[in-house]
Structures are given as C-alpha cells and as structure tokens.
Length: 306
Image 1: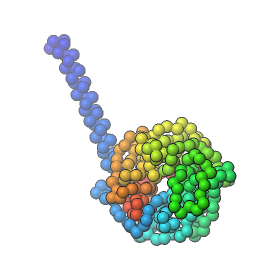
Image 2: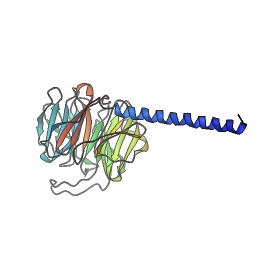
Image 3: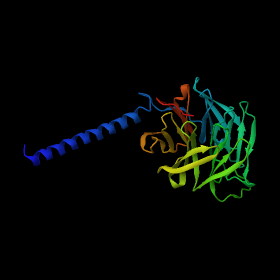
Image 4: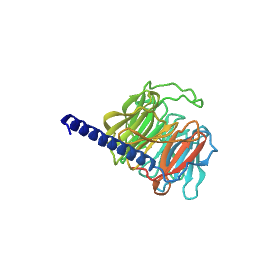
C-alpha cells in the first residue's frame, strides 16, 4: 500500500473508533437516565383536593409531610396505606419544610416572616422572626444540617394575606441560623427559592429562580460556605438530591441533573406548575411531587440522600 494511502487508512480507522467511543458513552448516559425510574413505573396521582401544594419533607419512616399554603394546612402522606391525612391547621402559612435531627418539622411560615418548629403532636414554636431586628421578607425554603443549623432562603413574594407589611430588608438573601438562634447572612440573590444540601457530599444547592440559575457551594463548616459555582442555567421552586448525587429541579415538571450539572432526565407532570419534590416511601425510593392542586408519586431505582 502506498505510504499516503496507509496514513489515510490509519486516520480513518482512528476516527471510526473515536466515533464508536462517543456513541458508546452517549448510550451509557442515556441508560443511566432511564434507569433512575423503575421499569414500567408511571407517575401516580395521589390526590388533587388542594389549592397549591408545597414543601414536602420525609420523616424517618418515609411518610411525607407537605403544605397547602393558601389553605394554611399541613398534610401527611402515609406510604404504607397510600392515604393522606391532615396534620395541622393554622400553620403560619407554611411553605417549605424540613425535619430536624430531633424529629421536629421546621417550616417557612411566611404569614409573619417566621420559621416554626412543630413537634410530632403538632405543637408549634416560633424560632425566627427577624434578622438584625428587621422583619424577614418571607422565608421560603430551608435545609437542616447535622448540627441542627438551618440554611434558609428569604425572597419576597408579596402575599394578599399579609397585613400592614412594610419591607424592612431590601435584599433577597440566603441565611444560616445556628442551633443557638444566631442568624448570619451568607449571600444575596435576585430571588432565592429552592434549597437543598447533603452532609455526605458536603454540598449546598440554592436556586435563584428569577435569574434562572442554580448554584452550588462547598460546605466547609457550620454555616460556612465556599467555592460558589454556577451549577446549571435553570431556576427552581424546590429541589432534592438522590443517592447518586443527582439534583432534581422543579418548575415545568421535574428536571434531573447529574453531579456535573448535565441534564440527564426529565419527568413530565400533568400540571401547570411543579412546586417541589422529595424522596419518601419504602427505603426512601419513591419520588413525592407537589404540583399545583395535586400530589403525585413515582417509583424510583434511586433513593434520597442525607
């Protein structure tokens, strides 16, 4: 074979194997995304009796508590019976929720710009009302770390049920409240909303929904963040993480990103807006979705992460 033809043949062969490698990697990525959901599983409507569902949080047994903010109620989904019961009336207009290390349900109760702690009997205690003596705008979502410290977002969504409201904090901030009640400001956003973290991964994710961006930080200590990075160009109302480190964002359905910020899956939800999402159920492997007037579940091959 002439030398020039031999070189051309080698180049074509190299390009062919490079193409096969790309195809193989792409197919693996597709398989990974498809494998998130159990085979033949379909999204299941549990109930559509609400006005606007939000803030799902799982207790240690996998039961999911969630809010119906316009009606000022908190409900609980019992995964064993697949039934929903009212847990609490008059919740301070609870929005986002999360369980602390002692089994108390913490709520962003924005009627008076507060964070509440609610025990298993439904007895509530106000934890936070202000920052540096000024009324919070309206805490929206929160995540609790291993020290029972609370990371929470404080955007501004003016509610028609607020009485004599006067904005005292001009910025929309991310805060941290330690277990002694001290609050520090960590960052400022256009409109911070969804938030979730992981003790295992030492990461905190925060959505700036109006800027259509989600950021990730390294957690380097109690209430200490570093290395803020843009995670993806998508904002989110709520969010959760699975045990593979994939991040689930909400809005138009549920969009799933891997730990590198690459979209790997999308779950269509038959509602105009999907507000929030968490893992619950048996082995925490059921995706629980709050969307408009409804709540849904979807059986997964992955589970939630601490």
